Image 1: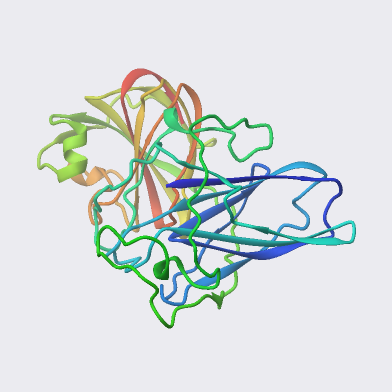
Image 2: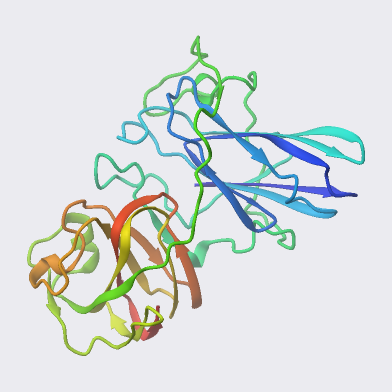
Length: 345
């Protein structure tokens, strides 16, 4: 996961600021701390589709920050068969009657974010990303103009190649496949489908709260699905507010809690939640299309069909977490464990 950051200073608000953006494999774009869009749409890596951007009403007089969080999946996954890390950005900027191009060049700042450990193995052949995120290592505020980059930020490597061909055809040899050189017949195209319309969809109910008493190490189970690793206890699950869809209580490494939220319909999107917890508290977020509330045994955890989950580690205090990749779900479950102390979701 690589963070790209560009500061620009404008004397006036732009009358037009449009262009295109492309990243191999996925990006989320922020402007002045505001999330703008994600992409690109899946496409043939030989002819990747560049996303349109319109920042006309988002840039303001003074200092502005354009920030992109870019993920490279790797090779051989069901959702991303081939590619090479790369980020391209072009913005045609018109201010006070003058037009300039803002490009992805060596003036940008970059950082490999250690909040996401690189090189993770995959849990399922149709899941390219096995996400683990540690909030204690994240450079909070980096998408905003008030942020002051430190020595963890560096300049990007700029490919000596035409800007109209994908990263697949440029750059140094790929370490895994030993592909190198310019592959003929590759180029960029315009995005062929509209950008996705996003809506906030609240959970329908906090349908189930259980205590998970671990008889084996938690991490071992999530690595190998160890049989008979835990038992479910439905007693004393903490304080539940069904109206606010909140829970408050304590949990430890051996006595965790699992909160299962239902949604009114099957959805595709980015599950997110807020948790107030001690530093080091860990949450595994799992999604599922079906679930039987009150079912006993190991099926109380939603890790029943796809061995795929997202792990978040809290910094001290309030944390708001969101999966980087989109999910398809009817049920979302938070499995919470860690250092002890009071936790509120």
